[in-house]
Amino acid sequence: MDWSNVTYDELLTSLREVDWSQPPRPVSEFFSRFSIPKTQQKLQQRFKCNVYYYRSNYALIVLVSFVIAFIRRPTALLSILAFGFGSLCLNDTFATMLSDRMLRFIRKLHPPLAQRIRATSGGHNGYGAPPGKRSVKICGVQRVAVVAAFLSIGLLLLYYSAAHLTILWATLTGNAVVLVHTVLKTPNLKTRLSSAREEFRAVWRGYQQPSYDAHDYNL
Image (cartoon, rainbow, N blue to C red; front, side):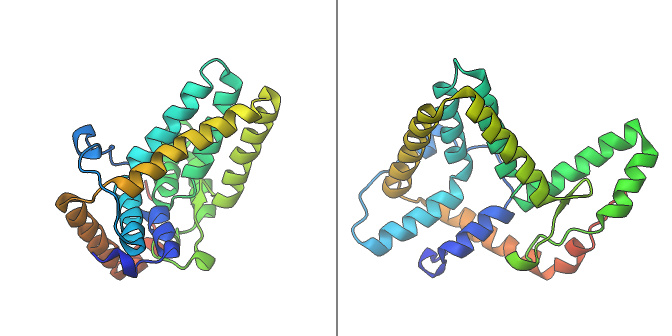
């Protein structure tokens, strides 16, 4: 896959729609083969490829940096978890999976309530849809409202913990490690093959767009 033809907007859209449930890449692969890119074009290609392929590893690095920084401040740690959960809800796959699992759980406790939620949820218009037309609901509630609620909770907990400098340090440290790795990590053959498979799946998912728009809530 030629990452020079992929724009940053397309990369963000792919990260928003791709499945984040895959485990992080092995440590032996993650810390092998480093080199300095010779041209700016090679640097950009490497950055896009590594961000997409090692996304789970990078998310884990950022999470660990926050856990270490806030290990003695549980309130601040809860604020980071609220921020993280709200950010995960921006991913179409995660939001859809979360909604389906919550509906299954509600159905076990109160079937009539689950039926009413399904009736108001409608279908998901998330996978492959343009950003302006993307509409995903979590248990009948617009995703933007769920994300806003968790981000607000995170801000309140952060304000209460008074850990602004700590969160700044953790953010800079985690992202600095990620940035260095994305620039210096040389993509191997396995990385390129995985990217090609993901590209094929994205195209195939586009062909199946009508089935996603008519998402079935019959659990």
